[in-house]
Image (cartoon, rainbow, N blue to C red; front, side, top):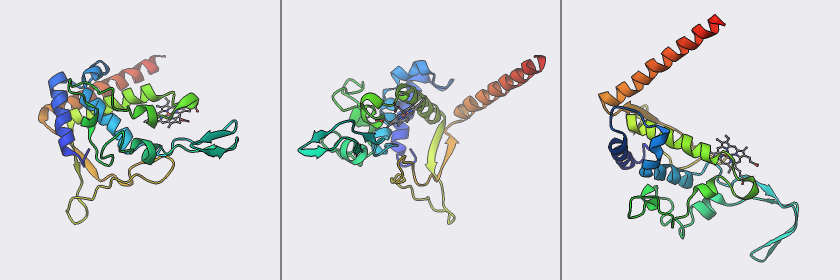
Length: 214
Ligand code: HEM
């Protein structure tokens, strides 16, 4: 998000319109947060966490585009370069552009291939945690953007640090560096977080007391 300040502004516009400044987003709000959903979809497409999926083993001989693949072979799907960065499905695939999923009516455009159908694997071994993960990531993204402005940090010379678009080249890809900092974008936003902290501390205190009573 630090690389895309204009995306943050748009997201905050949606969060302001549907949630206002007096509370944090809740799961019930997610159905209204189309742009936030599009940010999460674009993140999974732009830098998928498993760029080659998980390897699958052929239980029998198969043929793919004229190539014979013997049973027992390990097969990797080229999830990132071959599918999620395929310009036929996603024009200018290197560009982080959540708007690509939004139709004229402001809803998610069902004619654009949903990257979640790829980023979580496919077939019999598709990720069973995908719905849980999507809801969790979406509420986290919504909550963070509702409160914080995400900016690039400064390096040891006081200059804006360089943000890379490269993921690590491991089986599970993650950003290679993370030089960012978060600041509440308004006093109201800061108090939303402080109120939650107080509420959480009260609950912990209550739990400790009840444990003592046992
Ligand atoms: C952003 C979050 C996540 C991503 C991108 C992701 C992605 C994947 C992928 C690509 C696979 C391999 C599917 C295949 O073999 O084709 C997988 C498998 C799996 N995932 Fe996830 N996953 C995520 C979150 C989760 C969560 C939250 C859970 C559990 C609550 C979970 C549980 C599993 C399990 C148990 C498998 C193995 C399924 C099997 O082999 O039958 N994942 N995931």
